Image (cartoon, rainbow, N blue to C red; front, top):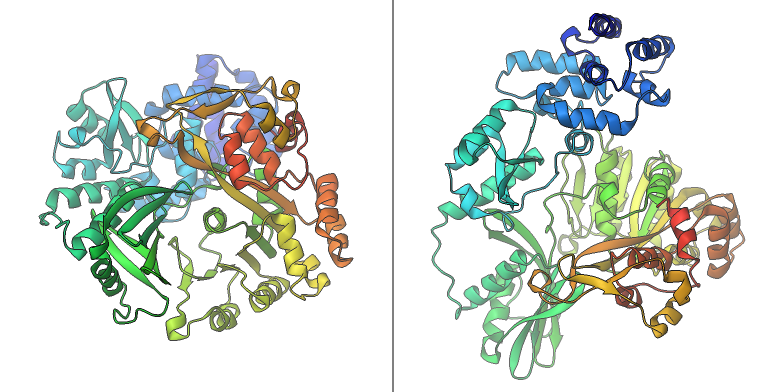
Length: 637
């Protein structure tokens, strides 16, 4: 015991030399010593090495590098000892923040005593909310769930007044195995946990969620409780229009189709990329519903001979939704399509998009974090390109970087970046906007879409003057995107020197986890994929039977498949020599480790994530796939 005390004192002295805080030193290492996972002698050896290193490597990293500890041992200790540790100490010791930043946050906390240390660190940009949640979720094992009002068990929220949830920043979500599952902004805060236990009892499951998502869910619940709106009149034009949009929001659909037929108005929803029938209305309501939607989008209700387009802002359950609307003239009236733009509360983390480990590492290293150049996301409409671009921006944005966008329209809103929504009605066109973008002293430029030679040249010229450019392109795959740029009469040397990477992608429906069951591909399916029964015998394909959870479709949610083309010297040389697409694809596979869209999709079907039917529906097969074992190796699975 004496040696343990001596060792911890040595650690405190070491922290003092680094300008740290004495009473926040070595809590994790101290616990590991008490458990016997690491010895006093090993820690002192690691401290000596640390004192000789110029870089600020954490003591825990050194102990792991020396082989004295494993990551699993650290995580196990964190999960057992977390409630007795202070957040600041954990962040410091794990290397998420520096001692200087922690000291600054503690000074602020002395003045603002009601604020938690984690909240201050995030507010001051000392740590990102993503990193804070990573500590709590990945390192400590608290389940990370972003609460959605549609999934919340309302019987749990009725156990007390909403003000208590706000005061302690937690919200009950549902029951798991009979126990209330509560998500906290700070699951290490003893006062918040005690407050939850007083309401729900001591036997609760603790999770973690972001500050913004907890507040958003509480705001929606408050709005529901305070709503005194009259029931919707289902027979009025307003009632029909509102009920359709509300139902679409509740079902989390991407597009609403209102199609006039000879004898009815047909309404369909696009969900998970597939259109499904919602409801039919009498043909007599077509004119009044059309007029109502034109009024909502500030369009000319008297114009019935020309196509029109506009935007709608719709309030529902205390949340504001933005919809893009298009009117298209048909023989039976105007077909109307509404796209829900801001369906997601938050942009996805890059590591949640569905990229495999090696591909994600390569994408971050060679495309996202390089200081200049053009990164292009390609794929058809609805393939998730915008989501990917914004995930990249969310990953790299800091207060030290100026980011400006030109989009049609803005689909996600992010703090700390300047976003412009194109509006041709007032001559705010892409061409006009792009002229001014480079004059705004940006570090990073986001161009929503390359539409023509002009926008392509602006992106390339901006990158050649030291800017980083993120944009999207409508092409079949990554190689097609490169070839299409070459066919726009842009100099090959400019393309080769400015484009750093092209990411092709598609969205495939995921197998419903509730009704999934093993499935054996038919000989015809295997022939179309390009495998023999022996080659796929070790893999378990799944298919959903259909249940209430998935509305009897067999699918629930979507997963992205990717194809990352990083321009190395061989590919640049092929561009300079105007090689055809099949040669560029072969060079990419041979020299840059390209895994095609089809290969990524095949692996995800073999892993039981999606189905062979989805591959045939969504993904082009341009060359035969390699063995699944080889695909897994290339992807680092």
